[in-house]
Amino acid sequence: MYLAKFNDQFCAVADIQKTEFAEKFPLLDRGEVHARWKKGSWQITRIGDIWKRTGKIFSVHYDGADAYPSFQFDVDGTPLPLMEEVLKALPPEMTQWQRAFWMTSPVPELDGGLPIHCIRSGDRRVIEVAAKAGTGFLN
Image 1 (tube, helix red, strand yellow):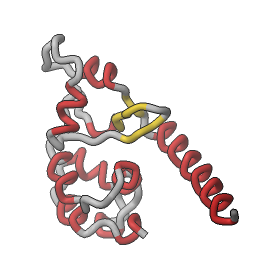
Image 2 (cartoon, helix red, strand yellow; image 1 turned 90 degrees about the vertical axis):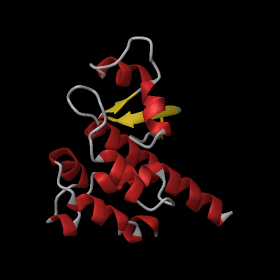
Image 3 (cartoon, one colour; image 1 turned 180 degrees about the vertical axis):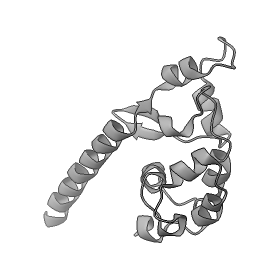
């Protein structure tokens, strides 16, 4: 009985964190990913799903559907070049939400900067830091 109450409270806190994340870092649905994609064909409407399946981007489950954090896309709507390498470097046991929170949290090894800022600027240090990530997020 006590454990069930604890789990309910934990889920409520996690939901609040996810909502705050979505307010600060806009989430895109499949249609919005396609609409931002300037180089692509109008026929490939599920490009977000294709990029996710091939490891170029990731999604989080939010409000009952897959949602793609907008920070992982360039101005032309394509995935940022370093995103795929960082996703491959992150520990595979990290959940999608843990990945999202890691990318948007200050990291001491990046001089206190956010990994997503390094990904956006092309700072390759983020790949090595990603490979060592997990201790604070997996516990």
